[in-house]
Image (cartoon, rainbow, N blue to C red; front, side, top):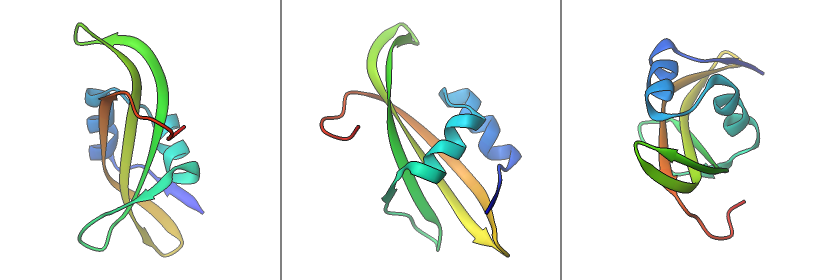
Length: 89
């Protein structure tokens, strides 16, 4: 199925520390999360082990929300959280 990354989603992703490759990976191989307004949510935790905004983080969790229209996945938005998650990788 084709994945269409909305411009808004890509802009938010870049601001929050994610990229287009990660967005597609979350959609294809992430785990399902709760979503509202008829959207679908997927998330995935990645090893990070870097500094972001002067703080060191072990991992980052990317959450992508999207809809499906006419056999096409269309992203709505993306969130990125930094920290450490147990038993999710």
